[in-house]
Length: 338
Image 1 (cartoon, one colour):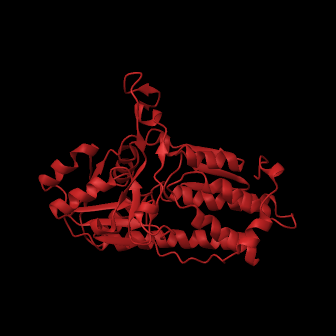
Image 2 (cartoon, one colour; image 1 turned 90 degrees about the horizontal axis):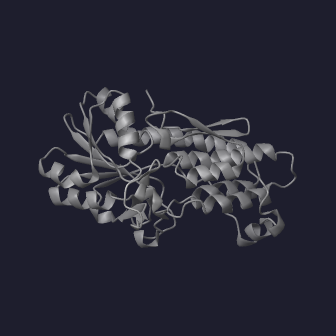
Image 3 (tube, helix red, strand yellow; image 1 turned 90 degrees about the vertical axis):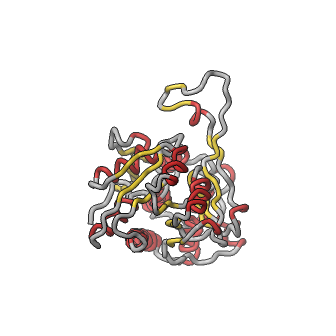
């Protein structure tokens, strides 16, 4: 089985974390070396890594900090402080589920390194199973539209389909303003030998009208308990168009968060410069304002099928007293943990 570099874009070597810089793809494959937690969290905030890369990075940050502080009698205050910093990195993404898992292990006395590495191995296997399940909904001759990038899952889906004797083609939206569709999805599909056509985001209705698409597969950054999802801005309008044209709309989902519905998911508003500029080039006249919500909410009733990442929640619960008694003192707030 071949994997895209985006399938597992983070590596841990000793106490240093190496992060594939997705903003440089497809022109350059370069890894950022993070030697402290502030550098690693900055890679999340600056979208140097995204999607599953952020999930892996969260666990590797904890793992690196645990290794560095393994001789300390009580590491819980350090981990609670670290969890607070991670949880504030990006508002739409549900990092609290991940950090609570590690804090639960810490409070329960579980072996932390073994628990984290075991969960990451489980995550990798379940991502493969999720891609295999998605391939089951494809028929020979299908053309799939995708939006943004699902961290190596799309070429894996295509490979499973190919192994079943199915020929699948793809359309990928550019996914403005970060162009993950053209820089990442089109790149990884083409790199692994699959037929992919790039379109701009505003061409979807016309391409569907021309009957060039018969399936849609997207990812999700956040899943509410009622099945609503938050995904890259532009997903909602594709779901509406899919319903209009009678095209199945499939979503590869993470585990559900505590959000009851999509209304409970905070939408991240990113800096307007990311919309008005690209790689240092000004795209709009000076003085023009920009508005960039990074995600939108697609309601459950527009989704044909949720394809779940079946990762069991193995975090131990911890009480409010456990949390408050383990929080770091105010004067400790600016220390590096890595």
